[in-house]
Length: 213
Picture: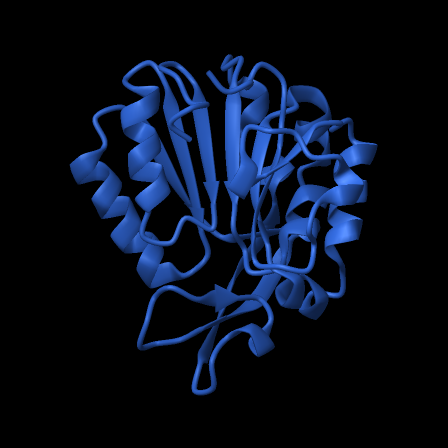
């Protein structure tokens, strides 16, 4: 984030949790930039909203919903003891987890990206395996704006959601992404077929105008 984000950029934090990345980004994009945080857990979203109001000097917004490839209502599973895990798949939450119904929407529906004049956009997506559905619901945005994406590589989570990391990477290729990085080696490019999809970690899909400085 520190090597990519610059003043005036737009940072979109999908699966923001308490907002650690949102708050860091707010300092990097400055008053000329914008931060959009998306969090499905209602209690954490309320904390995040207050935290951004207290700690972010620039422009920011918090959207309380789960993102996917359709609209409606869906069960969100979470551990009531810790706030670090939450998922649309019950199997991805430790035993004793609770569930609550939350709004489900597509990125293209709830994020006002067509109104943004930002030329450089960085999206962080950490949704415990639901990344494929999130990206499908953002297809128009990805094709038109081509933001840089930082997204979690969670083989078990993606499988629980009925997809695979190969499917995610193929979709991104289909909408126009050609350059990928493993976060461990960033900013060195890695051919898509050589990315290690069997480990937990993060991948980067390099977008328009977001080459690291």
